[in-house]
Length: 60
Image (cartoon, rainbow, N blue to C red; front, side, top):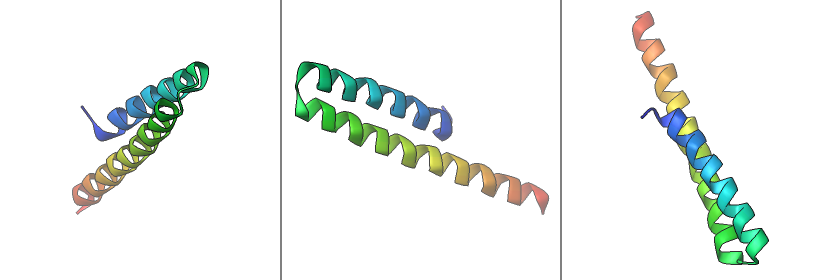
Protein backbone atom coordinates (compact mmCIF):
# COMPACT_ATOMS: atom_id res chain seq x y z
CA UNK A 1 0.00 0.00 0.00
CA UNK A 2 1.17 3.54 -0.75
CA UNK A 3 2.62 5.46 2.22
CA UNK A 4 0.17 8.33 1.71
CA UNK A 5 -2.81 5.98 1.88
CA UNK A 6 -1.37 4.08 4.84
CA UNK A 7 -0.74 7.38 6.59
CA UNK A 8 -4.31 8.55 6.14
CA UNK A 9 -5.58 5.15 7.29
CA UNK A 10 -3.37 5.30 10.41
CA UNK A 11 -4.67 8.79 11.16
CA UNK A 12 -8.27 7.62 10.89
CA UNK A 13 -7.65 4.60 13.12
CA UNK A 14 -5.85 6.82 15.60
CA UNK A 15 -8.78 9.24 15.74
CA UNK A 16 -11.20 6.39 16.43
CA UNK A 17 -8.88 5.05 19.12
CA UNK A 18 -8.54 8.50 20.69
CA UNK A 19 -12.31 9.00 20.79
CA UNK A 20 -12.83 5.51 22.23
CA UNK A 21 -10.35 6.37 24.95
CA UNK A 22 -12.18 9.61 25.71
CA UNK A 23 -15.56 7.88 25.87
CA UNK A 24 -14.25 5.07 28.04
CA UNK A 25 -12.19 7.32 30.27
CA UNK A 26 -9.01 5.44 29.30
CA UNK A 27 -6.20 7.99 29.04
CA UNK A 28 -3.75 5.38 27.77
CA UNK A 29 -5.96 4.52 24.80
CA UNK A 30 -6.65 8.20 24.15
CA UNK A 31 -2.93 9.04 24.11
CA UNK A 32 -2.18 5.97 21.99
CA UNK A 33 -4.69 7.24 19.45
CA UNK A 34 -3.00 10.63 19.32
CA UNK A 35 0.36 8.92 18.82
CA UNK A 36 -1.08 6.81 16.00
CA UNK A 37 -2.39 9.97 14.35
CA UNK A 38 1.07 11.53 14.55
CA UNK A 39 2.67 8.44 13.03
CA UNK A 40 0.10 8.56 10.26
CA UNK A 41 0.91 12.19 9.49
CA UNK A 42 4.62 11.36 9.28
CA UNK A 43 3.94 8.38 7.01
CA UNK A 44 1.70 10.49 4.78
CA UNK A 45 4.41 13.16 4.53
CA UNK A 46 6.97 10.51 3.63
CA UNK A 47 4.67 9.28 0.88
CA UNK A 48 4.35 12.80 -0.49
CA UNK A 49 8.13 13.22 -0.44
CA UNK A 50 8.64 9.91 -2.27
CA UNK A 51 6.09 10.97 -4.87
CA UNK A 52 7.86 14.30 -5.41
CA UNK A 53 11.21 12.51 -5.80
CA UNK A 54 9.73 10.10 -8.36
CA UNK A 55 8.33 13.04 -10.33
CA UNK A 56 11.69 14.83 -10.13
CA UNK A 57 13.47 11.75 -11.51
CA UNK A 58 10.93 11.41 -14.31
CA UNK A 59 11.55 15.00 -15.38
CA UNK A 60 15.25 14.34 -15.93
